[in-house]
Image (cartoon, rainbow, N blue to C red; front, side, top):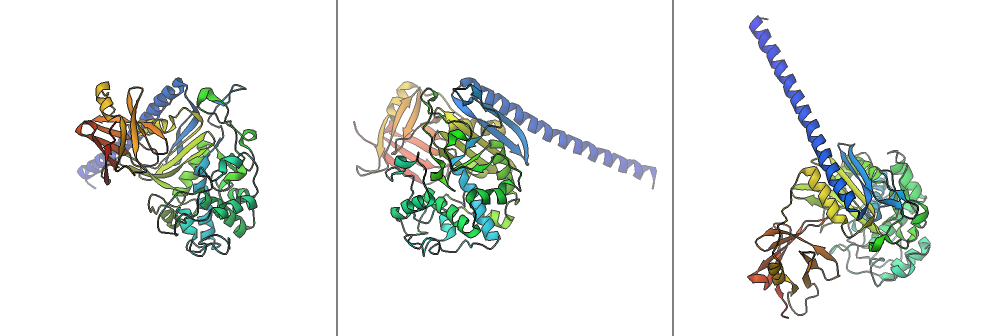
Length: 451
């Protein structure tokens, strides 16, 4: 080898080495900057003292940020920690879906299998498949919906037979697989199916298939009232204690207790093929009418993710996995003053270093948009706008109210946690409004109702 060639080779190796070091350094700096932004954002949240809960952010399976705020038990001055446990509500559905897919993997169930053999008197049981139930396409009525009696018995222990009778008595809302409608009944029944095929309790199945293999020691299916198990939950009004539900009413649909870190470990493992095969993970992510199998699409600007939100009593949780970024984020709360979703948005903004435009709006301009807007006098989905704390807020037909951010040109955004933003574009000084779901979604034009 000539001296010139040797020198050139050494130079090349040196340059490659430097390049690798620079790349590695840049990655470290990148994660460090994310951690710094998250720390600053959560410190601001904690100082506002209107949120109690914990968060875990994981990158490539490693926890890069975790923190907590508030109290597990206000009466005893027990502060929350990163090990605090929370009822994760409907995030439990992701676990139930994973267990169903595990049963499919073990050839105990088929996704196209109909359920009349499990529930002979279920309306349309011969048409409803396991997959229909996982994707909320079964038509089975939701037992927790207002008017269904749930709030009359939720604090009392319910046997599986009693709950099954209640669900069967509700009947069907639509023909199976013709549309999608969220129903907790699907997941209660799926939990019963799992117990039948495995001849074990749901908690034992969860332990055998998920928590033991992943070494999760703080994740359980809870069958009792929540207060004796972990943190209390509190209503908004001066943090008054929320009357606890008996967790027998949430089997498979919303009664798993965990910590944000353990939920993050599960989500990361699930989406990386460590719970079921990647082929079944791909099936899990098949979205139809807004629903996958135990998950929903969760997007943040151009970052595409999958996950689920959950509410039970005064607990709120959201868990999401963003495949391209290898990011898992879990936020859980046992008390929030209507700001849970905004806090989740703040944390994502900090992680991605994303700045949302929120311009001030002159009061005289806001007044032009106040009022009720509808397609016609018979419109059941009319919504209203009011001014709250100097911001325009939308009131949906069910009474849910949400403040919005302003991007200018009479354009307001309601940034949803589990879905694309809803955009309201006012025209003709508020005479009408164009509602759009997402930046390129279909438009609905509603007219302002005259005073």
